[in-house]
Length: 413
Figure (cartoon, one colour):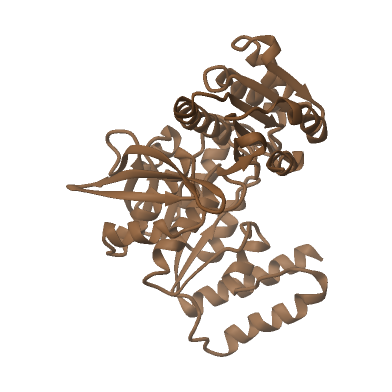
């Protein structure tokens, strides 16, 4: 039944793309797809009628649903969904979007090619791949993951536009694979669109929230940007990619900056909140991969050092759960994260069997008494409730199956 539905959705969405001819922006990568999608959407919606995927509608079912404008799935509503889709084809819907901003998942080989065949993007954005990408379980190795992601760039038309992360070497090398105009973004010298002068800030309204400010440098211009409710350096990459797209559509940097200042980053992704005993929690519990864990730990160090120095109290604490869908690379990936912890945190608490590899590698850098491993989030909560002190900065991260959001909710009480 699923295969039949998949074929129907593909045929309908291809026909809708052919009829309405929207500009399609495809976004893929191992991390940062959703934040980049939201950033691009926030910029372009100020000038165009734009649609982006809902939630994580980025696979062979969800992707065509986004093209067709369908919000929900489920056995009982597929008939009205399909009727609405046929109506799109039989009549002219004047409100159909001018631009589609579509996140593209690649859980297995062939996924990107399948999605490209549906929508044929004119603009392609590659966020990051990293040494050990997420969802590598069904690939032979990182090289095959990169090859799959690069299909988006290879498939762009000669009059298309490729937006590539300059700081990710694997992504940067893809610039030679496309016939399209290419622009790069990043923090490092040499990027076409470059971020500099990064600073963190804390807003204390009814609730505590964190944000980032930085300068965006492009050609001879330098414009201040401010991102509210965003705490990760890697979230700046989403803003830079969105700026590249905005510039492509002839928007100026001030317009782009104003649009991004109003955007809301997705929940459970580097959100700052107040925790028990006046601690601060960095909630990054939505998901985890080696690359995103590295970025989150960097934030814990940079932001934690500044907060603790200002308050003259507190500790940097990492609470890390298992990273899933890594297959034969599970142990290696967790050990790589463990090797990073010592320079970025003072205490480490792991949750789950695979995360014990993080703890094992961290023993080379942290005192043994500063590391503890738990089987599940409930065990971790029981220990943390008496451990957390005033001024602590606590990073909580793990794959969705580990239910690390329960740790966050507990620490907020």
